[in-house]
Structures are given as structure tokens and as C-alpha cells.
Length: 152
Image 1 (cartoon, rainbow, N blue to C red):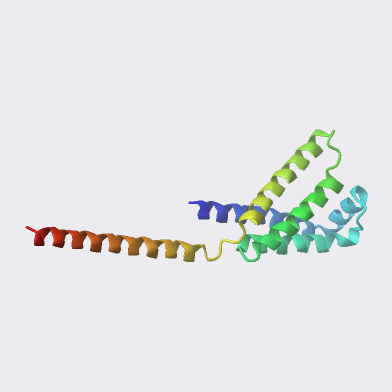
Image 2: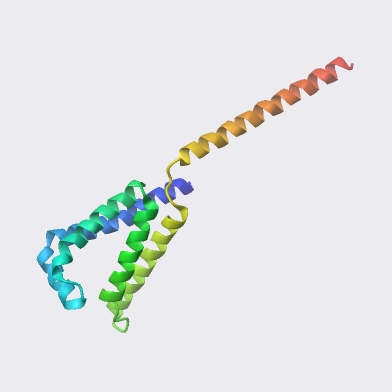
């Protein structure tokens, strides 16, 4: 169950960035104007930011290099919070900043637990060990039963 929750969580976090990135790419002029008005970053970075969000979101959702992707997205989200949602006295900006903090928390969880690859292999190894233990217990039980039958 934890594996499924991690997979769904990673996909949802990735989707957030993919959709945000598509929004930036589809309205590069609007994104550029917003960036220039609200931050020290040049508007010429709008397309690059959108592409970064799409690629990093897809990498995160895919489960490939999740630690690197999640760390890059934590830094990206922290910078976005500092430069675009710094007016925490404004209720909307405060809500956006808190949302970003929650997203960073989720990304840090992904970073902490890393990739889920080889997870199936771990489960298979556990199943093989359990099967071996069951076979050993059965063999031990048969040996005890044979020993008890021989002593009668």
C-alpha cells in the first residue's frame, strides 16, 4: 500500500509542475510580464522556466532520478515563494506561500525516500525468504513427526 501511495503522490506532485509549466509555455508573454513585474528575473526566462517545470515534473512523475528532480523542484519552489509570494500580509499571497511550503514538504519526502525502483525486487526477495522459511518449517515438522512415529 505504501508503494502505491508513493507512486500516486509522486505523480500528483509531478502533474502540478507539468500543468504549471504548460501554462507558462502557452502564455510566454504573460509569464514574462509577470516575472518582470514581480521579481528581479528577466522575462526572457519565461520559456525556460516553463520547460524546466514540464521536464522536471515528468521526471519526478516517472520515478526516474526522483531525488535529483525533487531537490531541483524544492529549490525552484523555494525561489518562487521568496520572489513571487513574499507579501505574506496579503491573504492570497500567504495562502500561495503556504501551499508552496506544503509542496516543498512533499518534495522533501520524495527526496528522503528516493526512487521506488527495485521495490518489486525487494518484495520478491521477501517472498522468497518467507517461502524458504515455510519450507524449512515444514521440513522440520516432517522430521519431528517422523522421529515421533519411529519412537513408538
